Image (cartoon, rainbow, N blue to C red; front, side, top):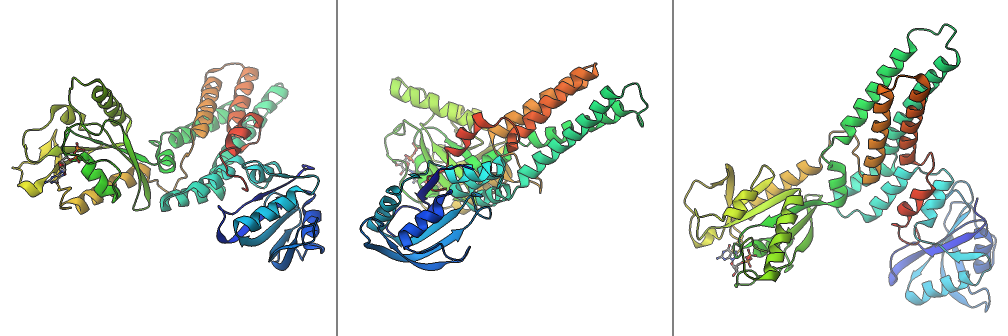
Length: 444
Ligand code: GDP
């Protein structure tokens, strides 16, 4: 256990009804007594408390205190929570009073959660789930994060790790007792288990990045010629003036991003420069970025100008593929002649001005976005860190399957198990701890 006691404001920014200051470490009880002038209250019950400045004796605030003696606390250490009024001066005075107590110091970002991990309260995937839960902006993100925090991914990876450890134990037995009779053909059994495990990991990794997309947001690029109404459509989707709508062609030179919540799924919409060849270098750069963005996006919204339909912009038409939603805009100015298709994809008639067809567009968009993130019941891979470790594990398994000598094979299996163990934090994790916990806010 750490001998340092840390504290921080664990609730959000000040000027709120209530603020929660949390302490963790061996000095938590002493600090609580110092501020309240009494012994810590009954464990895990809220008690009224008067918080005083230990130096001057002046009352800072009336509030509530909760005492969580180790090990039944979030961090596994002695933890105290001070619930005070959420005013800037109140919180400032409480934090100052705590800072004046020797052996207490302000917590670093994520330090409470890091201590929880170090005391075995949660594994790394659960800690990451907790970080995602705090950052979740939509319902689907919240659900995925909660499942991960509750240990769904940890159990999956931990289960695979156990399978490998079992396999390794059997293999060790063939090395140690090779002269004696072992039941059945151990090598063949082991091989089959490794093949099964590899197939399970392969299926999990081959997920079309659904879990990562849900975590990061599905990226939609709006593409189309200048003046087709891309910015107007984005504004309509965002229901606020995010992009500058202007009547002169080629005003959207840079990429504008808007984060939307579409039926609980996170969508990041990028409006980019109209696709046209220009003599203007700034605009050319904008077009280059727009094309790159369109290439990297999960989905595209291709916007064509209905007033010149069926003439379509060639560069935009070239971008239309299976992951593109096509719209013909400005239908308020006249019905575009059918058939409404581009590159074999049906186009939706819309008007960014009157809102006509927008409900249909949103419904189609929502369906596509959900499909980008939706999973079967199986837990989804949510981070590049996990993906890299799983690939590494599969690499080692493949080497094992090719290797001849049992001694070498055992080493490959050890490497595979170690790669899996690193995801949940079973082995050599020091190097990745900082990366994971620094993403937290202070007080968590
Ligand atoms: P962008 O260059 O593709 O982003 O196009 P803008 O959104 O800037 O729109 C270009 C011009 O077309 C602006 O004057 C808009 O007001 C107008 N516009 C956009 N959508 C519609 C529409 O559905 N109907 C009509 N009549 N005008 C539109």
